[in-house]
Image (tube, rainbow, N blue to C red; front, side, top):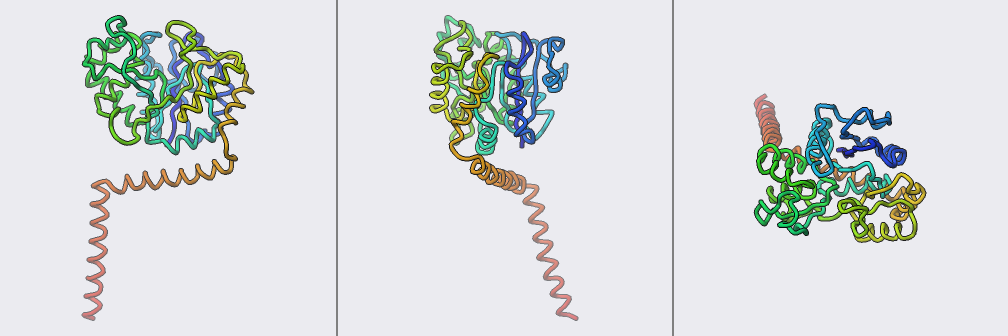
Length: 324
């Protein structure tokens, strides 16, 4: 199984930390696919980004307030492009990884069947703000979700199915603006997944973000200098959110050595110890997937027929031998 890194870029059409991303991905290139949704291909100067853009027929018209179509098109293509994609990480041009490649691999192998998806009841005045048109929906759908998250393949299928089957409600929510901060929680709620027992949905942030010091009325804090105040916030967030794996929003001038230092601080164990755990998790995942394939009705029926045939053959042979 693999991970799809799904970037939505616009404006300057760059990644603030492109080289950092390329180096980080290299370690796990056997399990990572990269996809970019863009608004203007001509503005993309990076050959690496160009090589990973999705086909033009999947590009959706988008803006800051109406970005859900870009999410859906990007997820749709990533799901279609490689059936092995199991985790879908939604990212922006200002995101960077905040865990080491090895720790990221371990997190995937541990939680590959779970979506890392922070949600809550809507926290704004529904009568004052028209965002996602929540005031027009039933109270159980007055929900909010982190706009950038990690979801599993089954949840991606639920997103795409909802957009197709419930198009009238889907369009109504999208027209409210900033719908990406509600619609995915609404969809999962409609399928009964938010309150389902078990670990299918891990209600935790996958992205470190600081909304306490907003850059604008709609944008979180921009990490620039890597000073003690910024690093203290990041460390505290990581300590309280053990499923966080990306940092948003990061300026291009944010020091690379600070990023590396923050990554290394989280790797308490030696690399060989983590790799040993990863190897065990690989085998665990392999046998879990094998079990799921074997335990389908068709496979069980085939196994049953094979067993019956083998037993019958055995007795027939014994009978023939006894008559000789």
